[in-house]
Image (cartoon, rainbow, N blue to C red; front, side, top):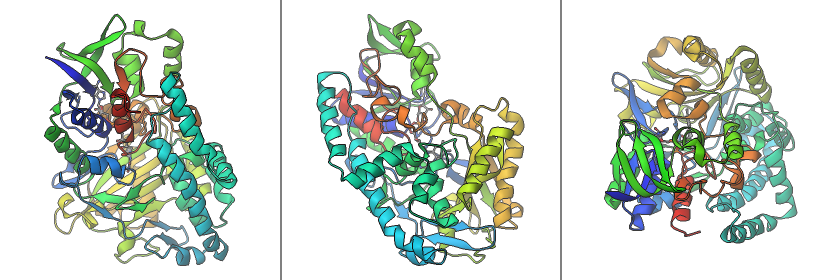
Length: 517
Ligand SMILES: Cc1cc2nc3c(=O)[nH]c(=O)nc-3n(C[C@H](O)[C@H](O)[C@H](O)COP(=O)(O)OP(=O)(O)OC[C@H]3O[C@@H](n4cnc5c(N)ncnc54)[C@H](O)[C@@H]3O)c2cc1C
């Protein structure tokens, strides 16, 4: 049987792409190398009786239109909002608690000036995010006639920004997070709460030019209609992708797991299908790759099909987000020195990195030592809002830590010490935490690469920097999802608009494949 379309990879973007193609009447086959679909958005048991999102751990970027089109709610997805967005304890035992309608008062305790500046910051970031969200929903321009029309349409949106918003957009794309935040605020904890978004998955200092863009990328989304908010999918991130898989199956998509693709087959410059690792060949009119662009173009595609210059440039595609991901099973809740009693602050994103200087030191340490011995940690305790994850009265926590050199030669040797550094960091803010751990999973950048196929452990399928965004994602010339062989497409996070559980690359790619751009 020759399929209308094969999708290489059953990550969330592969599933979204498959669903839109199937809804347009195409016969679609998804081939996933792992035993489960979901890619980096999965829920797995990591210790007996304890389950949690293994990699991606919080939902906020998912495009509401994708969710509605696929009727993810109808397929069982339920998302709860955080009562507070972030809790940031400081080393001197104070804290900043953001969200819950109380941000201004909380910030005023640190700086009246910052509290007064907060609405201006939110409005100005919101103005830029609104336009970029529109661009995120479009296929970027390419060199053909349709692409030129798209360039004009999308450029027009940017030109339509007010002069202030244009200045802000340029600053956000090019400047460091610290430079942008210093333009608004003076207090360290507030700059740290916002600056954290700039180094998530970005192996850089908040002083690195361009880090402000990553901050902006993380405010693109919404949860339950609230822009910029983050929430929890009941059942963990795997609940999102399981709902997507059910929607796909309902739409007629065939999904095969344990089906690693070893080669993309092409004849006379046109896609013919794929070959699996066991030698099985499957024919298709078109193939869309949800895997990392380097995997597709350097490993799966015959080198003779790529222009040598383009192949060399793909080889230099910047990867490696420097993240270390842990799940811990807990016998009791952590007691933070800054706010020891249980409360809604524990249901927020707990940021253990009290200043931009702390984050800069963490990056410097990773560069010098291989990983940061006082890393930047975000902790979430999803079992507080989701009983399905842990036995009664026990808990699970996600620990998402930065900075850990993705290119360190032998992560196998360093994993335990790096995990200790993460736990020590939590312990410093919440004494007794280490003693409460009854099980754990620690994933180094190398583990993220081997387990999920994330080249260099990069959580976004490639750095989110100006040279790898929009029409230049993954590289200039391949920015419209269309790969250099006829009938070959890229539908994962390596394509515009990049990483995060958004569904946008998958949906936009399907549109491009169907000629609906
Ligand atoms: C540790 C970590 C934390 C994160 N935290 C968050 C978060 O909290 N919120 C958020 O929104 N985002 C987060 N992200 C980012 C987000 O998870 C990813 O950007 C997103 O899941 C990528 O989705 P995707 O479908 O494009 O690719 P992937 O999820 O990477 O899926 C690609 C799929 O292709 C499969 N594949 C690869 N090669 C082959 C092959 N040869 N044959 C068959 N199948 C193949 C892989 O197994 C995988 O299933 C995080 C990521 C990581 C790693």
